[in-house]
Image (cartoon, rainbow over all chains, first blue to last red; front, side, top):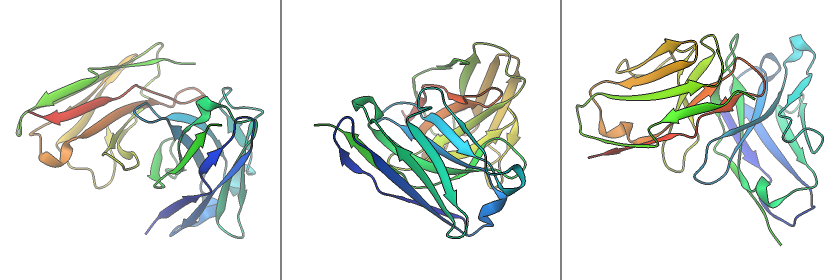
Length: 121
Length: 107
C-alpha cells in the first residue's frame, strides 16, 4: 500500500524557517517524481514544485511564487522527501501535502494527509 | 500562469441526480486537465486525468470531457459519498494551477 506521511508542521514566526518531511512507503521511491502542494484553509491547492526521479536526475522545478525561498530535496536511502521553507510570511499559512506523480503521467495519484503550517507572531 | 475558472462555486443536488462542474482555462491546455475530489479534513484524491481518463478504482458514474479551454466533470446518479469539494487542475504548463473548487452538497 502506498503511504505518504508528512511531519514537521507547526507555528513559526514571520521571517522564520521550517522544514517539512514526508516519509514514503509501499513503492519504489526512486522511480517517482515527488511533489509539494499547499492549501490554505477553504481555498484551492497551490502547486509548489517537484523533484524528478532517478531516471531524470532528481532535478527540481518550482512555482515562481516560492522559488528562491523554498527548496525541495529527497533522501533516496531513507525514502524521504523534504521541503525547506525560508523567510516565511503570513500568506504561507496552509496545509502542506506531499504527493506522488502517477507513473508515466503528470498528475498526483497519492497524497499524504497533510501538515499544518501557521506563520504568525 | 494559466488561470482556471471553475463553476459553480457551490452546488446542491439530490441523491440520484446528475451534476456537472465546469472549468475554463485562460488558454488552450490540450486536454492537460485533471479532476480531484476532496472530502472534509482529507487530502485530494485523483478522479480523472487527461481530461477524460478515469483513474483506477474511481466509480464509473464519474466522467470527464472537454477540449481546448472548456472542460467538465459529470457525476451520474449522485451518491451520498460524493459529497465533497471538487477541483480541476491544469498541468499543460508550469506552474500547474488549480480551479477555486466546487463544494457539492446534498439537497
